[in-house]
Image 1 (cartoon, rainbow, N blue to C red):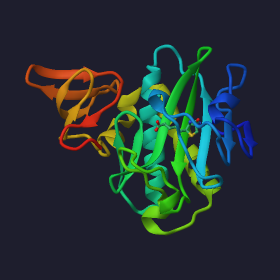
Image 2 (tube, protein in one colour; image 1 turned 120 degrees about the vertical axis):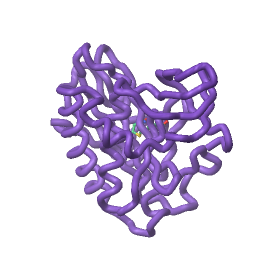
Image 3 (cartoon, rainbow, N blue to C red; image 1 turned 30 degrees about the horizontal axis):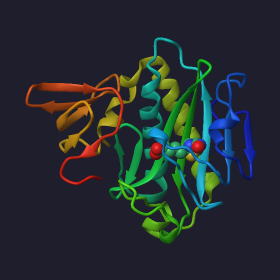
Length: 235
Ligand code: BTN
């Protein structure tokens, strides 16, 4: 069960540092504020204290599962947890962003630690518009900045854990194929011109192993990881 045991601290550097290989699978760490929140590609994850869902979960997927797919499993769980209370249609920007109304509301960071995966999720819930980081691409938003509603962060966390637990179990049994429909339906990059280190072209989907499919002049290229920029506009 993802969510038990739970460690909660008022403040920490990063919830990613509160879990390690000795913790049981499903253990989570949460906080009200991170002083050194970590994003992908060495970036920072910055939030105003008491505004966000900040959670890391310790998972031990078996060797036959591709750990990088976990970011997408988590992205679908976040999308479902955000759609229910807001009524917005969530989109997933491969590989780890969840967008509402074209703005990034949540990010996911999967890190390997001693054979386990520490899966970190940050959701902007109650930040006022002026508390959000400026100049981010995609632009940042919180649930509150989009619809004006101040929410109980515990309720958002509880919904997230419910979906994550279910989807993780489905993924363990059936791989990404088990949730591919839910993923593909929310694929923000689909049909857009994109640029990555490996290829420039039109994103045409996410394959059953979680790789981004880019149609280029020389055929479809599968991208395993990295940053995706929109070719027409650096979102
Ligand atoms: C990203 O969008 O680049 C990933 C952001 C991940 C942020 C979460 S917040 C909880 C956990 N602790 C961290 O330091 N990072 C992740």
